[in-house]
Image (cartoon, rainbow, N blue to C red; front, side, top):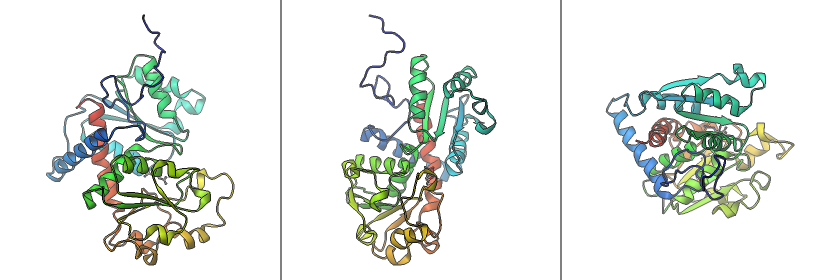
Length: 329
Ligand code: NCD
């Protein structure tokens, strides 16, 4: 029987095509380990190419990548743009503040118009969790699953390329994940980065993943994500190989979940003293933007164990890998 265009089988993973290949990148959750490893390995090859001073590869030549950032961003938007340009794509940055969305056009009407302009890929950041899913399902319904969607951060839900670049960074410095202890510290409740990091790390078989933070900033039943929970920073950091600090997401807090930023720093801020509890060769990561003096002391952020800026550089290679795989290379 002919299925109506809107028919979506209930268990279809919206990120994968019928052959089980990546068609959109919406979330790390639900992706098999092989796909994650393939993205990380592909990113390595792009990093080698850029080390050899090859600035551009023609893998996305003739393709149009639309950056749709409905929320602020420095690193993510810029590195997606650089990545797309290094793949020789045409990049269009929609100025959302001046776009027709500001006049009341719906998200999907905007998408239809951009598809009519021959968009091949959308990189989407949106304050509403699920917005990139909505777009992917819409493209499926209108028979345009050849247009790809990359989630660049949706609400508190997911930030898959950040999860991938964070695991890439850990693999780069520590090689084998299976005997590592990784602490994710701070405002996990509001953090899409934390969720994507945890899914990526557990899927890739990391030895131990810890969620460290005050009760009010940890999601209910966070241990179901396969993490060990710590409310005490010193205990949570002890003997860690990797520390991922998270920004305190003030803009996502409704009501007071904390007494004050000062008290937060006193209890959960990463300082030279608390860092000393981790292994001597532990690396310190942060997705940015950092709140110096709130979740991390400047001495640590600028110290020899911090790999916060290399994370940004690796982000370009990882985003190149994601876009080239989606485009079928
Ligand atoms: C993060 C984000 O926007 O989710 N930043 C980023 O993408 N590098 C983290 C944050 O805003 O705290």
